[in-house]
Amino acid sequence: MCIRLANDLFLHDDLRAHRRGWTVEPIRNGTGRRYRDPRWDRLSECSCCVGAGYRGIETCPSCAGRGVVDALAAPTEPVPAEQSPLKVVAERLDLPPGAPR
Ligand SMILES: [Zn+2]
Image 1 (tube, rainbow, N blue to C red):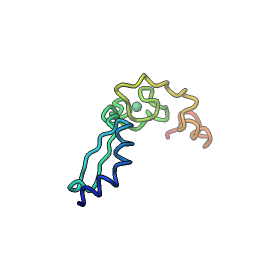
Image 2 (image 1 turned 135 degrees about the vertical axis):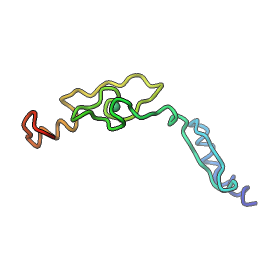
Image 3 (image 1 turned 120 degrees about the vertical axis):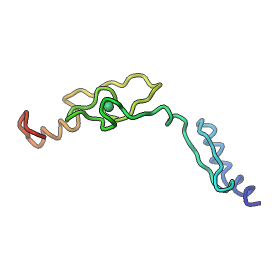
Image 4 (image 1 turned 60 degrees about the vertical axis):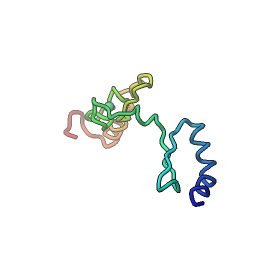
């Protein structure tokens, strides 16, 4: 009875998850659900910047500042060095070039 009620309650969300290609895993004896987008499996930490997205104050060229890489996605366009958010902040703080940061 309880599982049947849960199935009715989750029907809308289960169908929406299937349309999106997500996996649906019943949990708590069928009274709950765990939804997961399998695209997460394609993501991994960027080995160039170890997930930081930056190398010094420059945006990481391998992941374009995201810190993660998608195994199936086309290569990302690197952020131009002059638009690197940390570099812009450094310029606003008026730090002299070459100053320790
Ligand atoms: Zn990176």
